[in-house]
Image 1 (tube, rainbow, N blue to C red):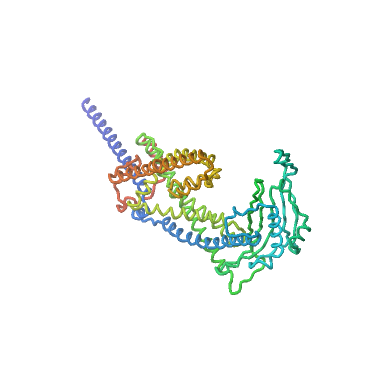
Image 2: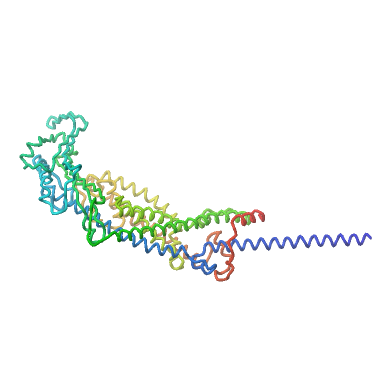
Amino acid sequence: MEDSESLLASRSEERRITSCSSWSAHTRSLESKMVDDFRRRLKYFFMNPCEKYRARGRKPWKLMLQILKIAIITVQLVSFGLSNEMMVTFKEENLMTFRHLFLKGYKDHHMGKYALFTKADVYDHIYHIINRYIHLQNLTVGNLAYESVHGKYTPLSVCQEFYRNSSIDPENETFDINPHIDKDCISIYPVQSFDNSGLASHMNFSLDFKRLLSVNIYLTLKTINLQTVRHHELPDCYDFHIMIMFDNRAHSGKIKVDVVNDVRIYECKDWNVEGTSGKNDYLLLSFDSVVILACFVSLILCTRSVINGIQLQFEFNIFFHAYYNKIVSWSDRMEFVNGWYILIIVSDTLTIAGSALKIGIQTKCLTNYDVCSILLGTATMLVWIGVIRYLGFFKKYNILILTLRAAFPNVIRFCCCAAMIYLGYCFCGWIVLGPYHDKFRTLDKVTECLFSLINGDDMYATFLKLRHEGYMVWLFSRVYLYSFISLFIYMVLSLFIALITDTYETIKHHQKDKVPVSQLQAFIAECRDQPESGRYQTDEEPATCCLSACCCFG
């Protein structure tokens, strides 16, 4: 009896051990399957569109949409660029016209060199401007007209700015000055007509050159840009608010003269172009709407892809910690954030904003040509840069992208260090050589000059143009320029090139030996399933399922 009971107990223990071992084997099998499925899911995530199509038959909609965007955005930019070029050319030519009309004896030279040196010349030029304005209709060959408000012409205004009180006596080396600035203006209407002598007596206009800071002449002219008719665009009306400045703030005996204008563009009140209709305008507006729609769809698709990548990143982080008890590095986590999608999102946002501005400009509601051109130009640049992503699907081209990405952090650190040296030379050159060299006169000119020297441009002219004001300054300039050129061309640039070359060789070595360079790549590399294997023809498991399984098995 006791033998039978022990036999039954032994058999019961055997069944319990067998059941536990089968449960353990089943658990390990299930765990291995989940790891393989997750590894396969990661590999699918990092596939290119062509591989995803072979793996699941998923059509590369984003790829086709990006190709379409490249075409339509480029066409849109070219169309707007031609229109913008006509507008800018029209403004520049009118500015040149105003200089020839109102500045006495003006020649096509640099405006900074146009200056007056005698009192008689100043009065003569002011009277000349007024007479030219009064007789404008008989002089100009353009479609210029006076501005009128409520049937009354807008006058020309002559305003002088001067110190309130001053007593300056250089002979006795004394002065007494009140720095408060007063302003006095007179108005001249275009219906009036005077010669220079009559104008002087009528205006009762006089200048105290010892107190004088500036004389500014303000006038407004209207015109129509008719050249757009040849390009099937509706002509715009222009208001040119012109200011002619006589600058005497330096009190050096040289009064600089300049002409600037501010332009307002708007739709003409009443217009008629025979043989045309608004069909072209409607086509352009429809085309811009198609661009906005395409960019909006692209923006949604890329944003969704970025969000999915971030979710998969968190899932991989938890998975790796549960199975391997390791923390995923920051570089591996950033692999899930596709920088190309971020680039496309920025490009789409700029294109949508620029296209909306372009529609406003075409409907004459807005005139922000410069802002629109910056938005569309930057968006088109980013779209074409995004083409590099698709070239990266080929191994021969991908090495360039990998090199740029790997070298970028070191390049930024290197540039920060080099910038400290560069800024030191900039400030030194500005302070010491600024008074004696035109290229070092202002801080922005110094930065441009030194950057040109780094690239080997205009070296001899920079050495030659230094005025020989003193041997000490001349000697310092030679030491300054020779040291800067030697340091940056022979050392800084060489180190910069070596930095990128070293990264290129490292990437090339890894590609040749096919050595995974990160935990993520090593984990994915264990999946040997090819896209054509059919192992990817399964629906993706939700993240919550994988996370709960990770927590359970962990």
